[in-house]
Image (cartoon, rainbow, N blue to C red; front, side, top):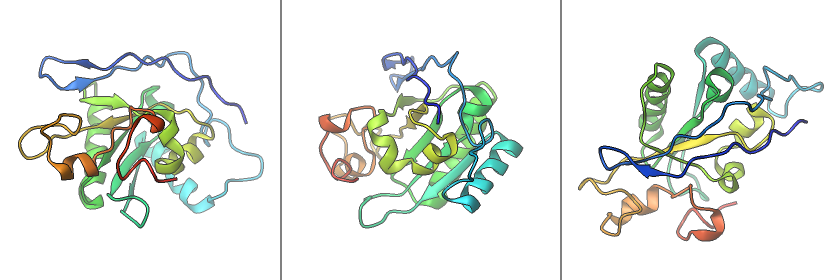
Length: 190
């Protein structure tokens, strides 16, 4: 299995609205997804991977929603396929019901495809295996570039701000920070 080199990422910066954003540079990196490099012996999860590949072929992306469970304290949704389609990052959202996160990721994916910007931060590759497994399986090799979309708490504060509500901090992991540099309910998973 071919493993692409890690893309160069720019540092997060404050945009005009004060929201942190990041614009990863991703030109020149190959795609090794299931569509570009089909595995000789099939995939580990044939049905899931077939549905993902069909959605990426038809729509340019596939959005996967994952409910909270014993290990993960909150729901999440993330996109597969933007790297293949746009040579751009996927998007993930945490902390809302799957019925809410999935349409958000889909809407943001369509907006990015259509040239709109999003308030994002890069996800550090150390988090990929535990939370974005189907994306790794589809792309067949980490690190695939993915970004984390953030939303504020009810008072407009983001989880990295000291005044943020505890639920905001607990349900919205700071995945741009390497796993060894963070604490909280997300750091002990995996």
